[in-house]
Amino acid sequence: MKGVPGLLIAVGLAIAGALCNWFYMAQKSRELDLVQFVAVAEGGIREGDTIQHGQLIPVPIPLRYAQRLKEVAPYYSDVSTIVGMTAYREFLEGELILTQDLRTPASNDMKRDLGPNEVAIWINVDSRGFVPQYFSGGDEVSFRVAAAGSRDPVTQPGQPLNVSPEEVIGPFYILALGNRRGTSERARMSGQGQGAESVIAIRVKKISETQLEEKAQLLLSHLKFSNNQALGLVMHSDHKAKAP
Image (cartoon, one colour):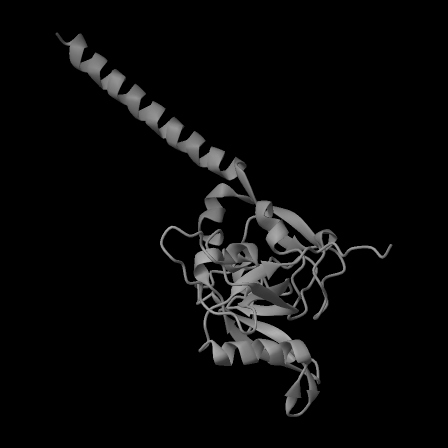
């Protein structure tokens, strides 16, 4: 019987040793497991530059130290959401890109993106036939409106539906969808809240201080007579047709 307590003690010490060894190895494993974040490559990035892929490099950080960092910095696997952004400040070589660096600062508002002969106007888009995630600032769009002089279709029983004719007015360039300027993915990365993205701001040229370009006047006239009814949207291709 005297050997039983000794055996139990030995077994307990072995289990404790195994647990300590497991804990030590788990800690070491977490130090060896690496997570890659985004940093600025050699040469840095100047204010106003469009950020290129070659200006960004991966920085491996041990997993145990990355738990808090991942809350304030994007992973390198999401580097495509940073490429193409305009640097609103200078970034130094080796500097870690933080989530706050992906946010558009308050001073960088739409007025800075408008030319001396341009203004912005806001248009309500019919949300029933519009997926805002596919659009971002800089996209070229046109608007579907009822043709001038057309009325709502009137259908008699047993007769086919009469469809009101439509016109397309445009193209215009999007400045913002609600409070979003860039892509929906970039907005998600920056922690930006979703605004009223069915209200879009478009870029419009001025003919004079009191007159807008013809297509803008036509669009505003339609909105006036339709009581600011929400419009359908047409997306244009990024690939321009070549002249024959």
